[in-house]
Amino acid sequence: MSDAPALLWLRRDLRLADHPALIAAINEGPVIPVYILDDDTPDKYHMGGASRWWLHHSLDSLDADLREKGSRLILRRGKCVDVLAELAKETGATQVHCIRHFEPWWRKAEEAVAETLDLVCRDGNYLAPPGSITTGSGGQYKIYTPFWRALKQHMPPPAPIHKPTKIPSPKKWPKSDKLADWTLLPTKPDWSTGFSNDWTPGEDAAHDRLNAFKKQAKYYDDTRNFPSQEGSSRLSPHLHFGELSAAQVWHAVANVGGSVDVFLSEIGWRDYAQNVILQYPEYGSKNAREKYDAMPWRSGKDADADLKAWQKGRTGYPIVDAGMRQLWKTGWMHNRVRMITASFLIKHLLIDWREGERWFWDCLVDGDYGSNSVNWQWTAGTGIDSNMFVRIMAPLTQSPKFDAGAYIREWVPELADVKGDAIHDPEEAGCRPKEYPAKIIGHREARERALQAVKQVR
Image (tube, rainbow, N blue to C red; front, side):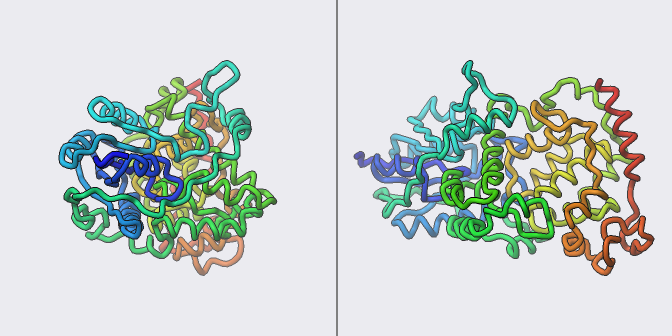
């Protein structure tokens, strides 16, 4: 064990339990945990507004947890490669430990850090290391179903590592920024007032959420598609920020029975998304199926107005508007409604999927590059594994099918007094309140326009 401290480079792994990089650093000697707010390295994929709200509270929680173990969190702002080099020089650190990340900008950053410092990377954020699940010929899977089938052969993941009882400290701590000075929280205006009603960031809160979900996980397939019910695990932001590991979730719920395997397949989809961006680093901005480069997406004033109506939840389609308003108010949206709203933007409004991907990136507390880009390309039909473009979701059918009435009344207050099934299409029922907009386009008209547009791709 060395007297020289080791740097623990934290990113989306803001926890103490099941943290192999932390354990490796402790085994080397004193540890300096550091989080670097780096908006330069990700460039256009710097963290969105909703994620920054979560980050503030998660870092605050992590610092408190570290202090209980005799440590603390060092905050620095700047380009991570430069900041880590500066910290190593200041502290005499001889090694940097981290959990490996797979977003293209982090992969490049890890390579750059390793050129000047002794970087020790560990896997620990996914069920299996991305890239490790290969075909019989040694290639990478592109289609989810065979990937999931192969991944299951490697399950369960290794048992989670317990929290360390103590984290050795350096003789002298380097200076740290103050979290408040980063202004991660919105103020003028403060659009996050509803976030704290739905979310408590941090490792302890993540385990509370996991324990609550464990009681209902066996019923997952029966309830997950109904936005008016509490069928979702709501673990996605905790997983995204690494307050929980995928292995912890797996071991907590895998044996509860019922339809939990459906939930586990969703955790597998998260692994699949990382394998996709490992193969296609530009998946967030480039069609995987190049023929869709010829798609005649709408642009101009009318398209811009429709995009804004979609963003604000003012399309005249109640389930779409409920989802978009839930997203704005809470930083999250029910998964079934995510599919409906995404399909509506792409196919009803004929607006480029990348516009939706960017809006979700900024508005989601669980905004994950892999999952977000893979999900949008799946809906658009442009992905390597995706829904066919000609399969156009009918929101006015989806809404009653999944009993979304209470959900709509909660998030679209103008419709709170609409009775019965009229809630799904008050315009057609003849009871649309004046303050609620008419449909910006009819379903049949939108469908025909989309089908005509996709012919240019063929």
